[in-house]
Image (tube, rainbow, N blue to C red; front, side, top):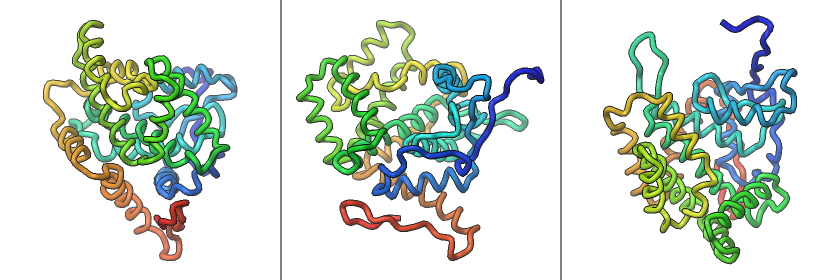
Length: 296
C-alpha cells in the first residue's frame, strides 16, 4: 500500500489538457478522428505531482519503464500534451482493444509480446506518416522540426549520407501511407527477432539481416531495447505464438494501403460506437485536406 505522504500521479482527461502544436495537423483529418476517440473514451493521462514539477527526466523514465502497464496513459510533466502524442496514444488504445487476449478470471489482462510489438509498431510508424503529411504543409510545426532533426541524427549515425536522408524524406512525403507500412513491418520484424536472441552476437546478426530495408537507417530512432525488455518482463508467456497477431500482420502486408485498412477496421468502428450514443447533431466535423480530398 502506498504511504499517504508519498506523492501520487494525478490524472487528466484530454479535455483537461492543452494540446500543443495542434494547428500543424489541421489538414490531417485522421488526426482529428484519433483525437476524438481519445477524448470520447475519457482516456486518462497521468501527470507528475507538484513535487516533481518540470522533471522531464523522471517522466521519461516512467514512460519507458511502464509504457504498457495498463495504469493509464503517458506520464506528462504538466497539463500540456503534444498533438502527435495524442495520436500515438490513440493507436495504443485501439491496439489494446483489438489485440488483448482474455485472461483467466480474477487476473489482469496481459498482452502477448507479439501484440505489444504490433501495437507499438503501428503507433510509432504513424509518426513517419505524420512527417510525410506535414512536410511542405506545416513548416513551423514543432513536431516536424524535432522529428526530422532526430531522424537525421539517427540516420547519420547509421551511415546514411545527407543526400541519402533527403531522398528518404522525399520517399516519405511522396507516399506517407506506404512509408507507414514499411516502417511498421521493420519495427515488428526487428523486435520479434530480438526477442528470440539470447546473446549480443545473435542480436547483432538479427539486426544485420535488416540492413537492406528502406528504413533501416531509422531503426535505432526507436527504443527497441525497451520494447524487448518490457515484453520479457510483462508479456504473457511465449509458449504459443499469437496467431491472431500474426494473421493481422499478414493482412497488413498484403494490403495496398495498410493504414486505410486500420482506419476501416479500427478507427471507423470506434467512431461509430461514439456517434451511436450522441445526438444526431453532434457529429464529426469534415475537414478538407490540402490535396482537396474531403475526409471525416
